[in-house]
Length: 99
Image (cartoon, rainbow, N blue to C red):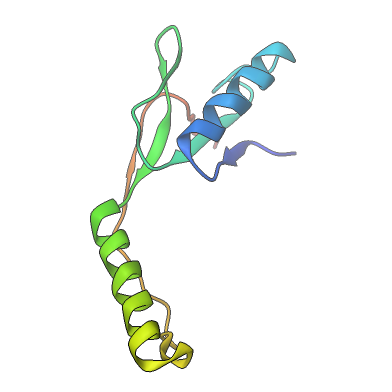
């Protein structure tokens, strides 16, 4: 049985939260929910969305540099290794430990 949901971004998490509420599913009592981009979204009452904070500016700069390299050097310059950016989880009360 599913106990948590991690969403593509905070806006999607907020939409899903409202859909879950209409179905009588309570966050975090029945299902924990996490977003990704840390928009500090208030879901309802005292419930704020837990989210992943990532370096937006550095992600954009890295992507732009890769695109420029691809334009200048040809499309075969994409990195072989994944590019890992530091991120942190900003824990709020849309999650609950279940063990």
